[in-house]
Amino acid sequence: MLINKGGKGMLSREQKTQFSYEDYLAWDGNEKWELLYGIPYAMTPAPSRIHQEICGEMFFKIRTYLQGKSCNVYTAPFDVRLCKEDASENEIINVIQPDITVICNKDILDDRGAKGVPDLVVEVVSPSSTFLDYVKKLNLYGEYGVKEYWIIDPKKRSLFVYQIDETGRYGAPNIYSDKDHVKVGIFDKLVIELEEIFQ
Image (cartoon, rainbow, N blue to C red; front, side):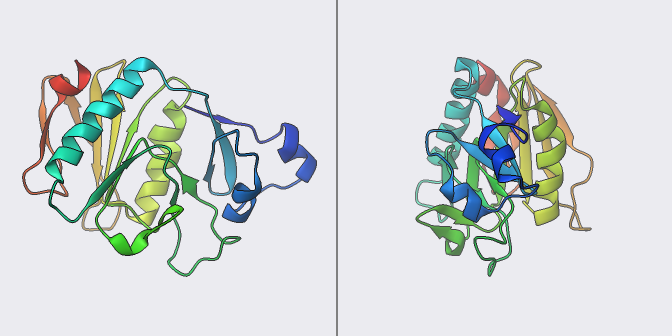
């Protein structure tokens, strides 16, 4: 759901090659953006109906499980600033809006979203976001130590699950089909029935 607009309009006038959260806050509020390594990507106006249904079902299952527990779950738009705790606005070069974000450390939450590393991120792939979700965001989330990263592909009815291993990086993904039941690694008892997600 992202398109790099690096050479168009406002960005070309500013003649900058890397942007920060400080820049991000100054942009026109009518357009939604993400920053990956300082490069801006404009989010498409609206995801598909199937995309939204999958996100809604996932959010419902996670939110239901978290009733009475200490973690929080959010859906996009929700700004996650991936950075060091003491980073200033002009030092932050990663601002993402995952489809679903789970955060168990409430210290990283503020009125603008989250400043730090989520525990679980779920991205639902759309045709324009494939490279970002499978490559750029995978590298970014792994670099910052997001414990678990789920990539849901509605077209292929598949799920890739990446988890941080003993080296502190993502290993090979576990790949599931729409008939599988998948345990969420960061929780003790939450199992997602993919057939229900893709229905």
